[in-house]
Image (tube, rainbow, N blue to C red):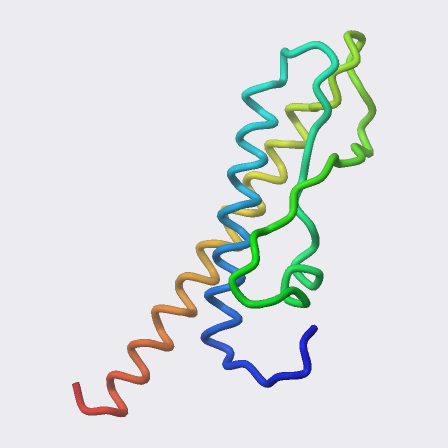
Length: 112
């Protein structure tokens, strides 16, 4: 991670950006679940994303499934991707709720 201090609001915003990109990649994996030879993809870790320059894009690479491959060589296991999608969705809801509450708190302090 960079040596410059960042606000937790900025980190929450970056987390939501990273989660949105991860959800997009998971959706693409699910859409290609019946494509022979397709390899599932995933995004870089959040720690790696935070270590990059501000405004950098989230890197996407091939994912290593712990569940194996289908007979046609497809690397997308729908059960695994569904679990990941549900997890990312819950994490995004939590991050957006915390972000919203922080804005409410700042508005309250400012008397608005």
